[in-house]
Image 1 (cartoon, rainbow, N blue to C red):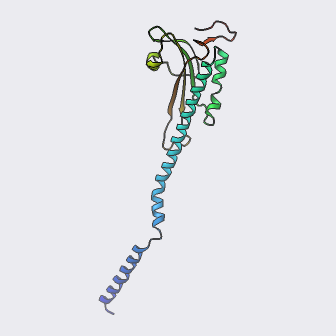
Image 2 (tube, helix red, strand yellow; image 1 turned 135 degrees about the vertical axis):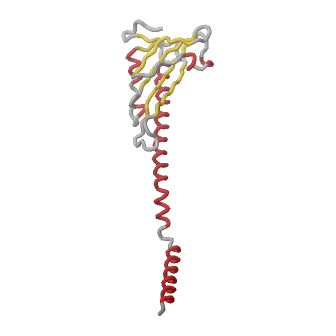
Image 3 (cartoon, helix red, strand yellow; image 1 turned 30 degrees about the vertical axis):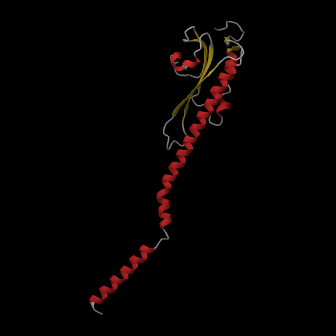
Length: 197
């Protein structure tokens, strides 16, 4: 056998080997899965984190509605009554916990021109400084010579995993209610005296 024939046979075997290797499809699915898996995991974790944040936001909306509605259904509330109303927060936000939850209930009265002013306010936690009432209360709700009950809820949501949403998200909700049984709800001390407004 000459050197030329030997080289020819080696090339033939090598070409056949590469051709056979190129036709193999047994590992393609595993390679594709390993490439797409990180993307799927990130999408799944991100979906869980966003869904939980939306769930917390929805529960905060329900909490703001509940505390405002309970005050709006009263003729007179005491300091203890408002504290008891604030105590529904852990149940309303379960299973997410209260974290840095702050709540505030404010009775707002409108003058003859529909300008808003605070009759009384009670808070739990440390809510942010109240903005100008005329900017946060819609003009359609500023009916002259009426009172509104404004409930506010503030919380900071931190995802359990924190892989897609890093840090915390500040959530807030604000709702307005018209007193149902009286023209204006009064806030009194625990003896029922020294009422506001």
